[in-house]
Amino acid sequence: MSEQFIIGEQALRELEYPQREAAFFYGLFLRGHSAEELRRDIEVPPQVLARWHREAEREPSLREVLERMVEYRRHVLAIFDSLIGFDTRVTRLQ
Image 1 (cartoon, rainbow, N blue to C red):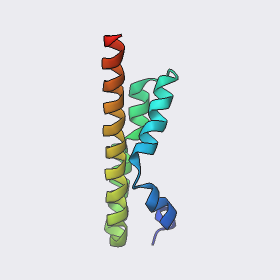
Image 2 (image 1 turned 60 degrees about the vertical axis):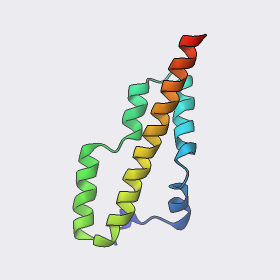
Image 3 (image 1 turned 30 degrees about the vertical axis):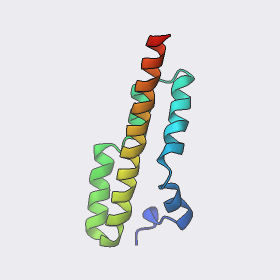
Image 4 (image 1 turned 180 degrees about the vertical axis):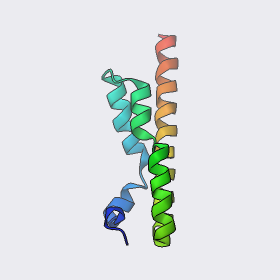
């Protein structure tokens, strides 16, 4: 297995809590960081996705882990976007 993709059990368990990471990014947003920059930090860029796809073709055992990581990042982004939307609605109501 490619060494750069070896993920321990602890790291895999962390993928079960996207709310934590979304909250971290939301905290950065509240401290003045750009929502667009934070979204770019959360997303997996297309060139990384392509590289991961090539790695998974060479090492099929990686496919499940990589898919799980991508899904996790998408979930973090969805939660972050909902928090940003919530923040925008609350600000307008005040």
